[in-house]
Amino acid sequence: MPRQVQITKDRILKAAMDVLIRDGFSAVNIKSVAKELGCSTQPIAWQFGNMDSMRKALAKETVAYANQKMTLTTTNAIEAFWRVGRAYIDLAFDTPNLFRFVYMGESREYVRGGFDSILTDRGNAALINGLHQQLDISKEQAAQLFQRTVVYTHGIASLVVAYWIAQKSGRIRSCLTLQPTSLRLQMLIWTSKRLC
Figure (cartoon, rainbow, N blue to C red):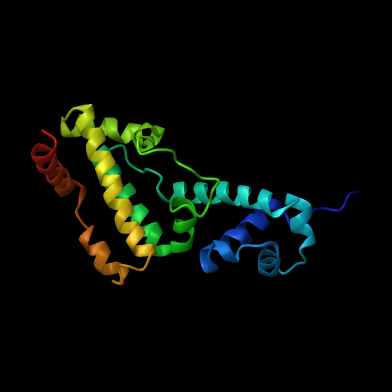
């Protein structure tokens, strides 16, 4: 009977993600991952062949991890919009190295596209349509609101991971404690002033 593989690709990718989250992307190499696993470099080389293959797999794994953190748990578009934005900023606070890797260009495997790609992403398009319906604004206004808010949210998260915002996460998070109902009111006021 053939010997069972002890160190699987999944275990290697989990170890690589642990190194990335703790120490940053520049620390992810075959030796650091082997050390994290408590093994030699041979199983990693055997499973992936080379570092580029492991990095490509790691990029897919980290994007899936980040997306899972921002998975929608509600069908209310306004509440979902608020929760996704909050989860995005939480990801920057909780795992800044992973955030930099996925959303700030350290991973060349995950390129979103141009500015308009924010609007064409399937999940984003569903949120935009929900905002259009729930706020009773045009689809163009909903798209503009969404795009501007994404840029604003990414700006906050980028400042967090770049250490420009030295506040404790609680202070920044307290600025984001608008409940979805008051967020709806804020959005209505904002859209009536800015988008008409």
